[in-house]
Image (tube, rainbow, N blue to C red; front, side, top):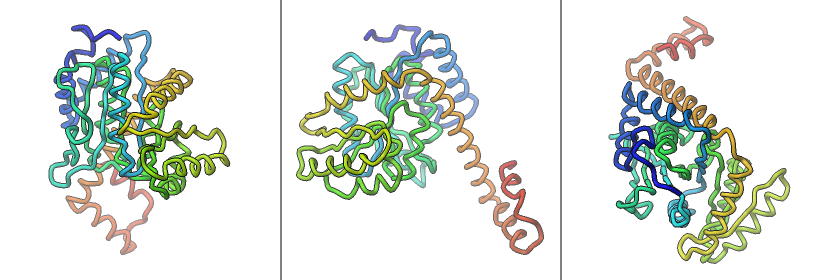
Length: 307
């Protein structure tokens, strides 16, 4: 595919400028809103939006980061412009991501068709931060046509990626037992494709069979594949399967991402109002008055949301 022109990407002509724009969005405020609006204007002016956003979730230790790196490398070789947004746990002190791109995916500093960014959850209960939703719009406006969003890998919380992604890839390990937890958490119900990573390790074939057996009872069960990010086996087949699913689910992607951005923004605003109410004592005072019978419970939530 062709590289972006000087006018492409709503002024985000380099990966450095894109990284700075996402940092601005993380800080919030009018400048962030202006950047997002500019990106949306750019996307709305195009006759077609062909970016595919793939959410990658699964239990910690399944090798999501390494697998995403392998998929990105193969897609980039095929000419795709690939962005990786890795949603990481937040530092309590700084609010920044505890994990960084440098420990997740091999960098390619001179490759403007490859972008990697770690994004903090910042207390998001759905593992989908406001920044992650906004960043997906920015990278699409910058001309990246394949976007991987890797979640924290925290079970039920990862279901939030369903709101944003065109496709959800569930990554499981071969050790056994994780797939049962995935079924309990509901992740398998949301996944469009399941892969057992680390096929070079013992137990991978058995994990595939367990997953297929469990999914056989459901309706429209996702396909279960086997791959190894380490030796590369099955990676090409996995990417081809994802691209095939993307074709069947084409259309409405931009609208989905805008809706996810709005939902994440509302959740972020509500979370901030709650933090403010806790810090200034209003939450405790309200709870005390309800406990003392001085006021009813009804209306208390609306009062907090009004700030």
